[in-house]
Length: 79
Image (tube, rainbow, N blue to C red):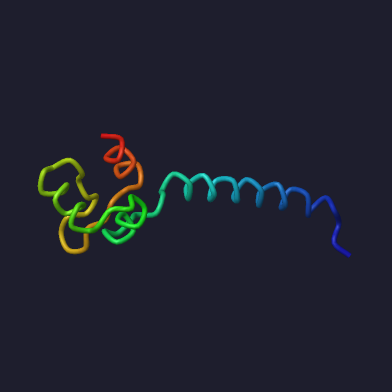
């Protein structure tokens, strides 16, 4: 039988690790594709492309597949 003196410190460490991991995940929100932004903002993809060309919204990654941060999309929607 395993002694509880060994289990409790292990469980405390696991709790700390879990809190660190969940904090990091929440800080790094997933990026949104052009289609995701279109669905989220309820506008067509052409509207988002026009906004990119005007410079009112800037993709996080502009080369290749355009990716957006949700905070940037929310700021754009507030304009």
